[in-house]
Amino acid sequence: MKSLDEIALALQGFDPQALSVEKAQEFIKQLVHPPVPAATEELALMQAFGRVVAKDIVSPINVPAHDNSAMDGFAFDGKQLKHGSLQLRVVGTAYAGKAWQGQVGSGECIKIMTGAVMPDGLDTVIPQELTKVSNTPNTTTIEIPANMLQAGDNRRKAGEDLQLGLAALHAGMTLTPAAIGLVASLGIEKVEVYRQLRVAYFSTGDEVLSLGETMREGAVFDSNRYSVLGLLNRLGCTVVDMGVVRDDPVLLERAFQQAAAKADVIITSGGVSVGEADFTKSMMKKLGDVAFWKIAMRPGRPMAVGRLGKAILFGLPGNPVAVMVTFLAFVKPALLQMMGSKGKPAPYLRAQSAVELRKKPGRTEYQRGFVSTLSDGTLQVRAATNQGSGVLRSMVEANGLIVLHHQQGNVAAGEEVDVMMFDGVI
Image (cartoon, rainbow, N blue to C red):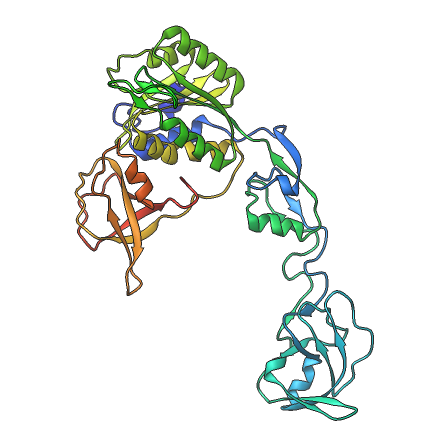
C-alpha cells in the first residue's frame, strides 16, 4: 500500500496548495482500491437492488427459449412470399404459453398470438391489421399483398436476447431495475454481490447544533449531516451516523478512533480550512496519514484526504453547498470504486447558457443552474442568482450544476456549457 507521499510523487505537477480538480481525482483514484474478492455475499434477487455484481452472471437458458411471434397475426412459411401476393388458409391458432400441435403445409397459415411459439417450418408473421380475412362456413382465409413482408419478419429468434452460456451481467455492473428484471428472466433466484460499504460520518464544530437543541447566537443547525447521509443512502452504503462532535481534542480523538474501527470510510465536514480555530486538522494528522489540499475549485477549496488505520478519510469543507459539490466531485467516484463498480459516470448534458457567466481560467467552478427546454427544443440552463457556498436553497431550486472547467474563461450568453444533472444524484 502506497503512502500519500508516494502517491503524490508519482503524479506529475502535483501541488497540494494549488490542486486542480483533475489532479485531485487522479490522486484519490490511486488512494482507494476495489473490494477484495472475499468481500462478497449472496442475496435473494429481491434484496439485491442497487448492489454491485461480484462475478459474471451467466445465462443458464436461451432468452427467448424458442422462436416466437413478436405480435398478434398470422404465421406462415416465408418462402412463399417469392410468389407475390398470397392467399392462405387458416388451420389453427397458437397461444402464448403452450406449443401448437399440428402441421402447416403450403398455402396454409395459423393465427398466432404475441409470444406464442412458432411451429416448425414457420418463420414469418403478418400483423392481423395488415391482412384481409375472409370467412366461409368451413374455411377462413387471409390475403397478403405482394411486397408487404420479407421472410423472417416479426419473428423473435431463440436466444435473441440472451444466449445460453453467455454473460447476462458482468462483474462490476450495478443491479438497476432493468438489470434485476433481466436476471429474473433467466430464472436466477440469488446473486453474488459486493458487500455494502460502511461509511461513518460526523459534523464538527462548537457552532453546529443538532436538531432539537435550542438556537443560540452564532450557531447553525447541522444540515450537512442530513445531506451527506442522504447521498450515502442513495449509493447504497451502510451509514454509521456519529452526529455532531465538538471542538474538543478528547471528543475528536474518540470519534475518529471509533469511526476507523467501525467503517471502511470516514467523512467529516468542517475543520479543514487554513486558520480554523479547532482541533480537527491536528487530530487527523495525529491519528493518520492525511493530506490537506487547497483545490482550485469553487465552491469547496479546502479538503483533507488520507487514511486512518484501514479506513479512507475525506474531510470536507463546512459550507453546505461546498460539502455536496465536493462529495459529488470526489467522494462519490471513490465510493463507487471501493464498491467494485466499473460503471462510467453519467455524461454531462450540453445546454446553452441563458446569460453571460463570468469566470477566470485556473479553477473549476460548479454553478447551480436550472435546465429547461425551449419551444424549439433547445436545452437552456439559467444560473442561480446567488452562488454563495452557504445558500442551500439554491441546491433545491436547481436541477443541475453548470461545470466550468479549469482552463475555461467567461461564457457568452447562448454558448453551450456542460451540466451535471441532479436526477438520481442529490
